[in-house]
Length: 235
Figure 1 (cartoon, helix red, strand yellow):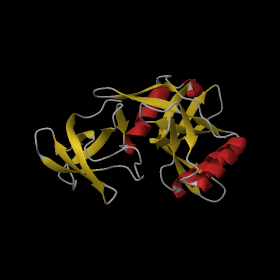
Figure 2 (cartoon, rainbow, N blue to C red):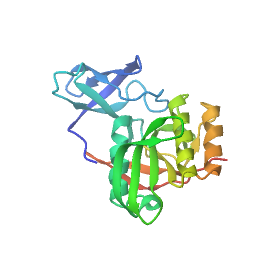
Figure 3 (cartoon, rainbow, N blue to C red):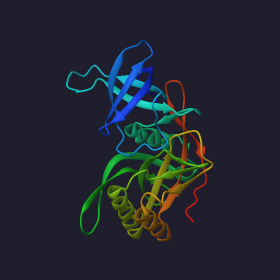
């Protein structure tokens, strides 16, 4: 996925969850929108290099958006809204081996359960395997040499686990994609210390047939792509 033009700066602080004070390299002081609902633990600190994008849309309250942060080892993608497109393009291009063979990748598709309707990030169809329902999560929490998810309690994430389990029960593939959006980490695991209910349910739905894949996202100067996968360790 190609990114919009990026501007370099230095992070001063993050506050009110969605705001970040940044000093651009040319000396300007800006307030940027931080499009990340999590705690961003291990993904920011005062003085960290950042890159931001700019919008000329007059209807926006903030013209600048925080895109990525460098904690010393390379870019970490903190704009969660970018990740779905990266994964959709990677699947369409055959870059995720576990999800190849589908001719059609649809985004933001409604899945109907017996009790309610729920929207999942991707639906994979027109393939030799069963149709696939895919939910994508941005995984950035680094604990030791392991990338973990979530970095905050996630009731919405818990709901998605149940929907994926229902998709499997209806004869489809249910796939949870943890997009590893930083360069470190030898494997992906669940952050039981952050949200034990999520960890418990994740292991339960895996036993029911939900698949878990952890592709590594790689940041170029103006792009984000998938570069292989890392092992998933849930026990």
